[in-house]
Length: 387
Image (cartoon, rainbow, N blue to C red; front, side, top):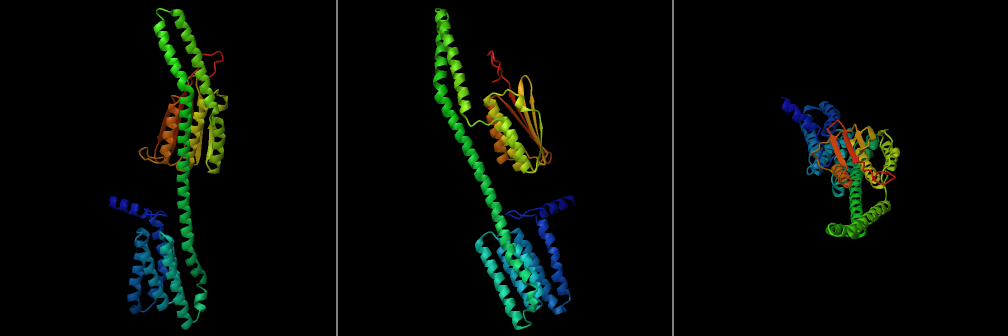
């Protein structure tokens, strides 16, 4: 029994193949079929023998049209025929059943099928106008004009809404691809810069170190000179690295913290910041890495978490910098793969460049926690700056 109830719950909460509200809402809408059923119940028995089977056929086509994209156009045609028969045979008020058909027309997969369905709706309207003009006059149809116009407009509104969602999804994919290509191009540029600026310098350091090792036993004075040359060359290499980092499109932690406040506020997510990174003496490279990681983490919170609160915690010890981003969103399964996990992988790759550590914890329904730690390496210079 419990398994049966579980399967039933999964069925009613299932969504149509192309997305949209769960099947539960589609079934709930069927409550309005009671009105034509009650109208048929007042008819003579010989008319009920035809009417009630057609109502069952109408309901079956409605459910089949929602569950199967392939059957949808046929479901629309069947419903139009049933509505036409009821309106022609009994009363023009049966035209209100067209709202069921309108929802199916709006879910048709392409404009060709929508055009066929709308042609059928217009043909139905034309036949009804001719029929009532010949028999009872058009007064009965005047009251139905708002409903008839709504049935014509609802499919287009649904199609435009669905098309808008598809375009929005495609735009997000395009933006993700642009971001990925930009990161790849930036990595290639940095790689070229490192190769061109540091390759020759590091080769010289290696050669002079090997030469000093060979000279230290028999020519110590010359070996000392080579070691001094290695020191001068290494300082020059360090200067080149600093110039390279300065030449990057630098992202700072403080700037990204300000951007995070604006982005989260725009997404109606409250933000709480603990700690002040302004007081930290961050090197440009560390500042850039932490800023990029914070940007990616906040982007994931906005796009994937469905959270209502985000907490950013900054701490600094003599040995490391620590940045924690946690939210109270829906969380995720760590085994799932998707755009959010690509961003997490990118953060890990950035932190590997500075010997940083990355930790991600998440549970379905319990939010997510990202912990980033970067070691503080103190230089031996007199200034005592962190690098």
